[in-house]
Length: 229
Image: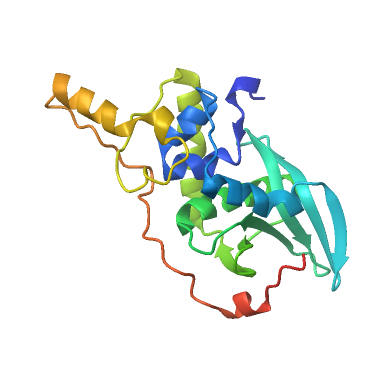
C-alpha cells in the first residue's frame, strides 16, 4: 500500500511531462493561475466533469469515472470511458484544441488505460484524445514504449513529491503562454543563477521535449468522431 502523500494524480502527468516546474508549482506550492488557455480547457471539460452514464449506438459511456492503480500508486478521474458491446474498453480524454503537443496528452491517457486494465482485469490497447474545438478524435495506441514512458513520469513525480524540491525553470518557448509565468519568473531566476553561478547549466529539458504544434492530420477516426458523446 502507498502512503497518501505518495499517490500521484493522473492529471499531473501531462503537466510534468510538458514542464516539471509547472507541475511542481501546482503540487508543491499550490499555485494555479488562470489564463485564456486554462479557461478554454476548463470549459471544454464541463460536459464530462459531472458523473453520468449514457448509451449511444450500443456503447455505454461513463463520464467523470474515478480510476486508480494500486500497483502504480495513481488515481484520478477519466473524462469519458466507452464500454463497447464486444468487450472493448476505450478511454477518451477531452481537450479544447486540436493543436496539441501530442506526447503529453498520450502519457496522461496511457495512465488512464493502465488504471482501467488493473481495475477491470482486461487489456486496454488504445484510446483517443478528443478535441472539443474540432469535434474530432485522435486515436492513441498504448505501445510498450508509451507505457514505459508513462511509468517513468509517475516515478519522477513521486520523487519530486518526496523530496519537495521544485524543479528549476526552463525559460524557453513553453513559457510565454503558461498561466504560471508570473509565479515561476523564469527570466528573473535565470538571470540570478547566471550572475552567481555563471558556470551552471540553467535550462533543463522536460522528460519528453515539447513538439512543434501542428494541426492534426485528418484520419478516418476524425471523420467518424462527433461531439455528441
